[in-house]
Image 1 (cartoon, rainbow, N blue to C red):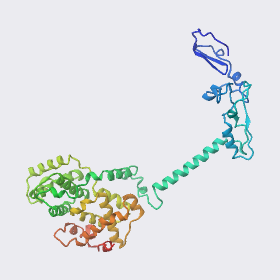
Image 2 (image 1 turned 135 degrees about the horizontal axis):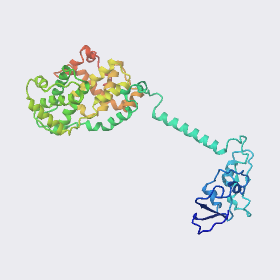
Image 3 (image 1 turned 45 degrees about the vertical axis):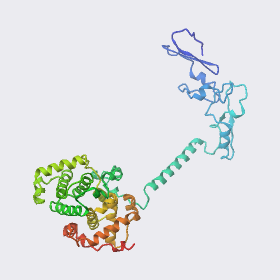
Image 4 (image 1 turned 90 degrees about the vertical axis):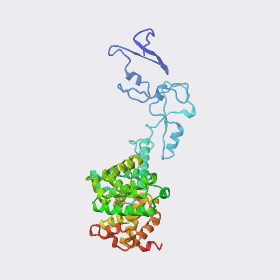
Length: 430
């Protein structure tokens, strides 16, 4: 290129000298006067036809010095060392390697820095497909195979996708249902109470709690409330009693007020305060109910969004492909557990899974807990046996004592006479 005056204000930047070439840029030059044609520069490259619109900006080529050689070398194609060429040659029958160097280079390069023209080399019969393309395709096939193996680990073949039929149902939220229940499972400890919290109560005991909940189950049935309301009512009672000691005369007040709060949270049509006062035989006034309502929500810090056994029951019943009979029997089992103080030791998800497992044993008369149930509940059969055996015991003695509210409820046609089915005695023998 022609040399320009360094004091010329039209020149920007210092001169760039690489391999004996000096390049400058100018501002405001007329067309055709800015630089030599690129075709003249391309003549310095061995074996490359001139491309007037192409500018090679690869950093390694612009330096023109490879592996410390003192002589500038402008390779025609992608540089490959002898070592890499030898590796390629091991996979070919007749490798042919052609070293290429610039016409400007008058000395021999170092032994380990020979530039090899791979593109002009006939290393395989299919010269139209470069070697690096073949290697890339092979690598992508291996990645695809690894992804298939990982998917098999995530969802085994024997596990059924229970959400595939609800892809068109927006209420099923198929895209988020797994995340929702993962959150329920991780946060269920917030809804649990200490299994021995009754020790801090000075005037009430486990038996009084059982009487209260058995009565509330009958009230829930008479008011025809939703299932969610009953489970949340029991949860609010236990969480409140864990933090607040009360006397036995106010225990029923705690129960009716907890049901009022649960109705406000779950129901569309909420029973009025006067209805709850009447159902409790006018033992309390309206102001007492409202004061207790304030006390409960303040003690619980208004935290009423907790996963109860009900939310897990719905998901696990779907995994078990339940019919109406199995569904009613499962709810019968878990409502028997609501009355029993000793069942507070089990988390809500395990209670729900054990109730369905016990109900399946009652219906089928043999143990049944397939891989789909294990997958969606995260509980194998051996983790459910202790809880299931307790449920069988409750089933055996249901209706024999004074606390028969759950037994009466599930002995009606509306609930499929679930209470009259024979308990799964064989579980107790294992």
